[in-house]
Length: 345
Ligand code: PEP
Ligand code: MN
Image (spheres, rainbow, N blue to C red):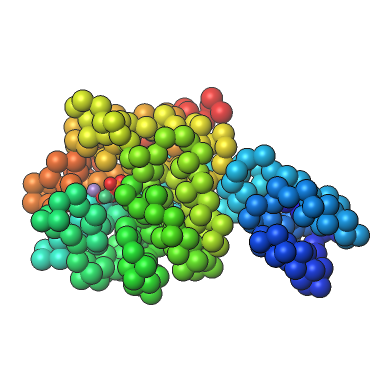
């Protein structure tokens, strides 16, 4: 991290620094603040020669070598001062609830409109709805681009911001064009580093936020944060981390619940944590308590599958969606639990 002598580097100075970094196959990413800017060296900045050359420039105060492997998402840096807002609520200040279908059934749009209105009345801040679905079996419903129109229509009807999962470049493009508010990268693609980079590039500067699920195969907490760093490093800093259960699954639950890593994530990164209890425990009856646990562990929000008539749903909805009535009961307790948790910060 390059700390300039006087607030910011001039264009000329930045060009010179960039040229030096390029000799070492590194690039420079300015991290702009009002009073001062710092400049991250992206690439392998461990070369002593690179550090010496940049530190030797008269307008550079010093080069800090950050110990943590993530630069943009590291706790305490200037990016953390930017606000991330969902449904008018600021992540980190207010507990945010995202709710809605696992999958939108394009043959039955009214079901989704009904759920959208019901989760809004239950107190949810934003609406989820799967357009394209990553399914274990190639014979299961895979999603349908027509559902994107239904999602956008539900946003228009309710005024709620919307969240949907993308699995490939073309889907990201369609969602950027449709101005989908939050793009989800699911547990399967959380290890698809090329897609993570592409989504960071395609959504940079759009205001679109990205919710990155934790892969079922991820172990160390840093592995998860580094996956998010691909998105942030590629240009979109508005990333939320979403623990959603990992392998090996716990006998009785769909996955191994991992909401407890929230406090470890929060120690290392400023990125908001939004827990998904639905895929973690995988059964509607277990979801409320898992969500409460997430709030207790200090999560900034939850994303919950909810359906007005789960048995008529598709994808995960019949087994793990809670009803809007249950959501309405849960939301005040989630907010209260988050408040209690903050007392222990
Ligand atoms: C989903 O949100 O419906 C989903 C498929 O999630 P995950 O990637 O966590 O399995
Ligand atoms: Mn699902």
